[in-house]
Image (cartoon, rainbow, N blue to C red; front, side, top):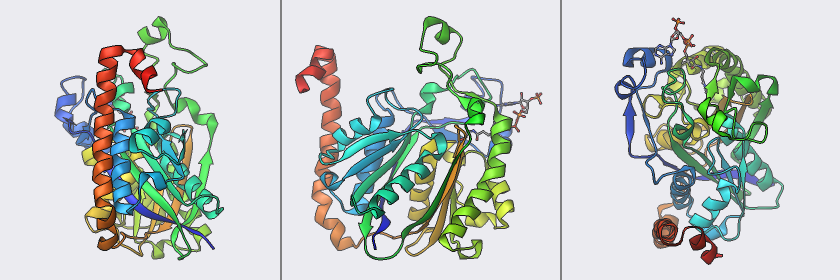
Length: 372
Ligand code: UT7
């Protein structure tokens, strides 16, 4: 039997940090309100030369390094994002090219903040089917580009960043144990970017009306989130034949500390079993779970053999959970083996980015065509 193991993980966040105090100079809010209502103290914001694809590629290269895998060994790249580079082509195609995943198919998956759970489950299912062996799953966001910085209901919440997992086939039992995926499109209006799609294409009027920005009915999303987090966790545990007593860690979507506390109460679990890092990153949407996972691993809270549940909710509406037995890092000996290759892959990614900028400056569209 084939199992889907999580063998690599990586994250990337922009250097620039935006604090609550800085936001309070832009809109009528204050540090105390934001901290007490959300738990957020600061978030990272992408610089001009950063985008969902560049952050994704950085996180991906780190995940490949941990997994001790070459990009050319990947069979599939799935990118989950609500702030993709374009409507098309897929951000996954751009990432696939940047990291040199020359043998992989690549596509985007859109399920808002729950996207990383859906994508990881799809990767695990594909591996278990026996058709592919190595999959890269990335959650990446630059939602700061879609935030109305005059709307205090939303601009305090979101941050930019990316996180990635490598999943690999192995005969050894473990890895992804179960998953549940849910959607309820009747709540689609609660969290949306109204214009810019085929229903309401971008026009001067949609831009004047601010319809290209995130619109959210915060209370409605909050109520929905507190209903589904504990329920989805229980469902996936049941499917895996586990109970909350078996769980070492829960890694929830990082949207609001009060939502995570409600989930802990619903599961009758102590808060110290939950990873919370939204104080430093805000809500990075689909990137929040892999970013929290990387930090949990690096701080020693997540260890090989641990039973962990990832659980999230978001626009759509969507929600889901995934249970896994954490596979742990590969041996140091194996890591050294590909160290040189990965160093070169990073250099290649930086050079490619610089080349695109120079080509754009010199030849505009012609620069792109030359490459083809
Ligand atoms: O990944 C999924 C994405 N979305 C979410 O997870 C959002 C879920 N929802 C939430 O986290 C919360 O609903 C918010 C944090 C967005 C808002 O917290 P709330 O406790 O639901 O506040 P509220 O919207 O009910 O607003 C309470 C008051 C209002 O004033 P009045 O009408 O009582 O006078 C708001 O105008 O707080 C006011 N308010 C603010 N005050 C200072 C709203 N935003 C702010 C602000 N600073 N930034």
